[in-house]
Length: 138
Image 1 (tube, one colour):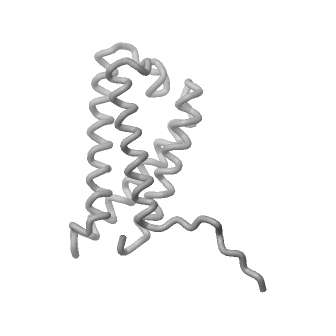
Image 2 (image 1 turned 60 degrees about the vertical axis):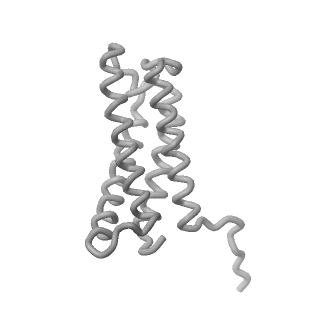
């Protein structure tokens, strides 16, 4: 039987690099929203009503992205050992669920950009997070 090898096989370090790149893009996007380069009406499913509300939501978003990045950094650097490694893996599964729920939320967005790009990014991050969480060693 002639089995063809895939042209591209994702590795654990490659998956981590993609995750870090997407998190950096997300962080940049949130700062563009804060500085109103991107109108806040285009985010949070078009439900924000004021600049003050946008600043609160975006501050929370940046905090969440930083926490997620720290969890991936712990996984990528083998900082955690034993129980800490298990805790990191549990957090990765929580993050995967978060990205999955965020993907569903993006599907109900009233803005086309968030519907298309937000869904694509969070779905990709969900899949990569599951891939990374399933691997014992990175």
